[in-house]
Length: 94
Image (cartoon, rainbow, N blue to C red):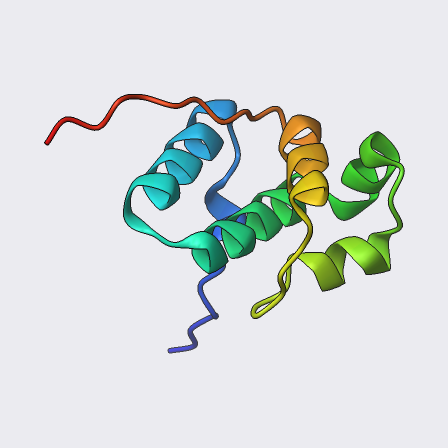
């Protein structure tokens, strides 16, 4: 029996799945988890498409959203917009 490496990008095949994934990471993860999640989504959509939509190069996108990277907030927002996402703030009740 052969197995393949799990890749979340293979399962991010709808806007609903992308939104659920991002919301889960925002609720349960930290900033580095969010950067990695955005990278997974960009990979699922296609880095070439994201590069065209943001005006950034593919290599800089891969670098910005790799594990351990700390992209500028402006870069995060550009890519979020390109993947069809946005950040909404809800009050957190004590």
